[in-house]
Image (cartoon, rainbow, N blue to C red; front, side):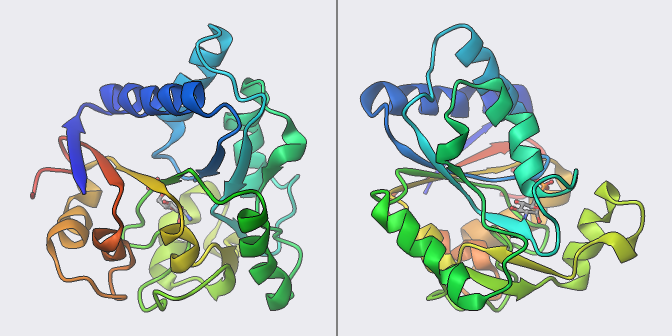
Length: 239
Ligand code: GLP
């Protein structure tokens, strides 16, 4: 794993440059995107670069990591809505080539189809990840087998508590989600994980320097050949 530490602003700029380089080399790349507050600076930077004609997503296909179960794409807390508002509507992407797992389909067989669709698109060239406070990637909570493909999960209390800030009350936070599995993520050719803020310092140390274990889902990244980790000074403070 390569680790880069800087301010949140410089981190967003540095990661955006990686997309510029990748799309210059492979304009029809397949990108795996993530939600959460962490990638917002990056998405703003990508939108800015696109407006300045320094990057184009015209031939890109995308697959998002996860979605809440029970929320359709028009719900303002769905990840489809998040992606449309924070990135897709601000860049020159063909919206029909953007995929977010369905929050409405609860058939487990259909969830696994997502992996097949990724494979049919040629596999993910670059997967972006955030990091949950408990080490989750996507919504792969502690204990998720490393061999998992896209599947439906029950969210832990700690994740629901962490995400309730976006909802009116804890009762409105969905109890389940659909997420790419650990294996789906590990199949990506390249991975960039971003983590910002003091609140992530403990789990950052654990997943980078601790044991590789399903109890810390992000620790599996130690086994991937091409992972870059972008941290701000606070998130890196315990390394
Ligand atoms: C959610 C998402 C994750 C994300 C995590 C961290 O639970 N499912 O993909 O990485 O939150 O969010 P934040 O970036 O807001 O800290």
